[in-house]
Amino acid sequence: MPAFERDLVNVLYEADPSCIEQIRLANAGRDSELLVVGAALGGIRTGRAKLHLNYDPYTSSLLPFDDAYAGHYYFDNDCDYVFGDTFAPVDTLEVPLETLDDLCATRPELPAPDFLSIDTQGSELDILAGAERVLGSDVVAIVCEVEFQPIYREQPLFGDVSRFLAIRGFQFVRFLVGMQVAPHRAPIGLRADGFHLFDDALFLRRIPSIEREGIPSARRRQMLLKLAFISIAYRQLEYAILCLEAAYKYPKEAPLQGAPEPAYIRFLEGLRECIAGHPKSFPRSFAQKQSLRESRARFSADGVRKTPRGLDIVLSRADLAQASEVEQYLHQHGFGALAEGVRNRRLVHTRIKAFLDANPDFDRNNVVSGLTVRVE
Image (tube, rainbow, N blue to C red; front, side):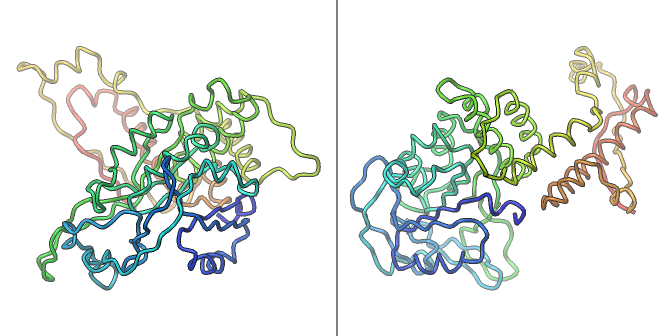
C-alpha cells in the first residue's frame, strides 16, 4: 500500500543467521522502516532447539516432517511440488529460542506489534503462547498459517489456534489462500480437486476486548483506528465501520509536537466523512420478507406451494463505470479491489430492491431460487 508505507515499521524475525542479509536486501526498496531480528521465536519454554533445514527452505521448521504426507503434492505453476522431496531434511541448526514478549520487553528498539504475520511451519501456536503480553496489550490483528492435518509431527491444528486466540479476544474472519493438496500424484488427465490441507487464517480483535478496563481511553482509540485500517486492508469494510464508530467515542491523543498525522489516520477520517453522507438504504430483512407464520408454513404439508423463480440482474458497462463517493475514495487510496467489491454488491442489491418495490405481489406466488448477474 504505497500511500501508507511511510506509516509502517516492518519487524522481520529469522532463525537462520545466514538469511539475515538477504532479507535486508530483498526489502531495501520499501519506504517503510525495516528492522530484521536474528531470533528463533518460541513459546513459554525457552532454551535451545533444532531447526530442521529442508530441501525447500520454505518448509524448514522447528518440527520434523511427518513422512505420512510424503506422497502429497500440488501443481506449482510449472512443476509438481511433492512433499516427500521438498520437506526432506538436509541439515539441522541448533538455535536459542526467545519469546516475543521477552524480545519486546528487553529490546527498546523493537516496537510492540499491532499486526502479527506468522508462518513458521507448525510452531505458530507456540509463538503465540510466548506472546501473551503483546496479544493482550497491543496486537489487533493476526494472519497465521494453520494446518488441518499434522504435516509436521505433533503440530497444533487450526482448531487449537482458533480456540487459543478466541479466549484472548480474537475472532476468526476468513481463510486467505485456499490451497488444495492432493494425497496421491496421479498422471496428467486423472487429476481433480485436492484436500484443503493448510491455509493462512485472518483473525481480528473483538472490539469489546479493546474496550475493557486497563486500557486508557486514548490508547483504545488508537487501537480501534489501527484495527479499522487493517480491516479495510483485508476488505472487511463493515467491521471497519464498527471500529470507527467505537474509536470516535474516545478522546484523541495529543500528537507529538511537530509530528505529522499518519496518512492512515487522515484516510480514516476522510472515509468516515464519506460514510456519514452515504444514503441509508437497506435490502429487506428475512423478517420483513415473511412473518413467523409464513416462515413456519414453508415446512407444513398443506403449505402454499410457490413457483421457484430466478432473478436475472442485468448490469451495463455504464453502471460499472459509476462509482459512489465511498468507492471513489477507496480507489483513490489504493483499495481498488475493495471498491469494486462494494460497487458490485451495491449494484446487485439496488437492482433486487427496485424489482421487489416494483412487484409488491412477487412473494405471494414466487420464491427466489437463484440469482444470475450479467454484464451487457
